[in-house]
Image (cartoon, rainbow, N blue to C red):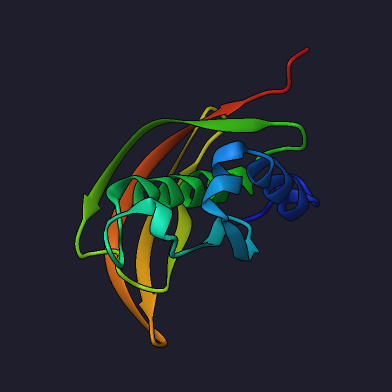
Length: 144
């Protein structure tokens, strides 16, 4: 996939990491390529109900951020995007030391971009798929 913005990595990271929810979750970008994003969320007791296991909400959040950030890597300069639809399936407990969400664009167009995110619980050097999301992002031109 070819980015339309040569500064896509800087712009997407700056936008996402400026959001209060992303800051509260302590999200960190591990990898970014056109149409692909890997995001990390450290385990935090404050995000858990059962000791050692993250609740569904932070799992959903990292999946959404990863999928829509991947979509954002393909936007022209100044454009933004926003989630308009998504579906997540939880497959296993999020009980690792960190969560890793791999967002990947499936199909991009001018108005809408469809992306997926697979969320892995990482513990002792191993990854376990704990959730998968399919998301649609609405691409928004700069305000004039």
